[in-house]
Structures are given as C-alpha cells and as structure tokens.
Length: 111
Length: 115
Image (cartoon, rainbow over all chains, first blue to last red; front, side, top):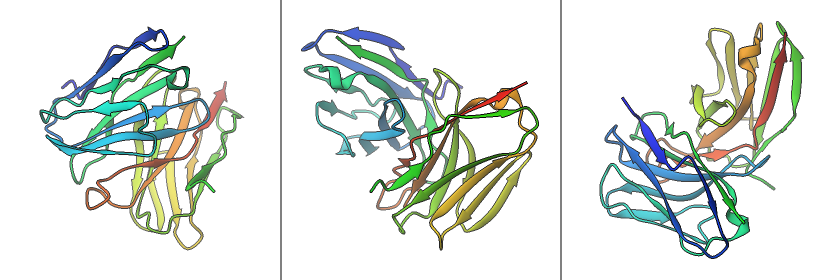
C-alpha cells in the first residue's frame, strides 16, 4: 500500500524556471491538499481539491497552480520560481471521515 | 494574531521525563484537534485525534482538549529517545463538510529526548 507518493524528493531550481511537483494517492480519497513547510512556521495550505475537476485556493496560493484531472493525481505547478518558494512541500489526502495522510515531501531550493 | 499558536521550543528532556506540549487557538469554530509527529526529513504522521473536550489516552500519550480555554495539550509519559521529533498540533472546523477538512497547524515544537 503506497499511500501518498510525491516526486521528486529534492530539486534545485533557478529563479524564473518552472516545474511540477507530482502527487499521487492510491486510497481513492476525494480530498487532496498541498502544504508548504518553512522552518519554524508549521504547514501552510497552498491549494486543495475536493474531487476530480474541483480545486480551490488555500492560505498561500500566489505563485502556484494546481489541477485535478483524476482522483489519484494532484500536481502542483510553479511557473516562475522565486527564492521565496524555497520550502518543503507536502501533499496530503483524506476521505471525509478519515485522518489526513501525508507524503514524504519535496524539498525545493530556488537559487 | 495567528489562529493557532505553539511554542516552537526546542525542548530537550532526559529519557523517562514527562513531556508537555501545548497549543492555543483563537478560532472557536475548530472542532477537531490533532497531534502529528514528524521525524526529520519525513512527512507528518497522525499521533492523536480528538473531537470533544476532555482527555484521550493511547499508551504513553495523552491528548487533552479544553474548548472553553481554547487550549490543547499533548503529554508524553516515560519519554524515549525515539520520541525525538517535531510535534505539530493541527485543527479543523470539520472532517469533510463545508470547510473540506482543511487543517490549520501550529508552528511545531522540536523535542529531543536524550539518553
């Protein structure tokens, strides 16, 4: 049982480059979330989705985009990377009455 | 004012000590309260989950919720070096209703238990 899988684990980007952080879950969960974690700041919600084709902004959505074409996948897109987007990104999924399961994270550095 | 406040520590205790971790919150709509444990370079894992005010015990861990004071705690008894991790409190308004189970996290407390 893979749970929530994120790729890549690490990435270094140059300012202005773009990339997609991949997230897939095999638990048939409707709800999926992207969080970022900065040192000493806890996790902040970037975007979330309540099902295929439905997404909405969280607390810190600027500079990011998402799509949800299938139940399993919820990619996060950075179009013009900035140093402020250096962070650890976590994807999570849950069903309506279950706990949230987190992936192992993607550690992103923008230089 | 942040919705959820948590003392970031760090907290260093000897093996066998009782550890107390705390969070306060300002949003009275929060109904679900969680504690996550996060080992270095790993994703958060759910440790405790409570809905109502009161205590919930699971082995060496006790979660306490006081909704009237907007205060939650996690107690770890007989702490072990393997308990060394970052502990995050998290809260949500619902489990999947109109707020879609979105979690609001505290800053996390770094705990080190030394032998």
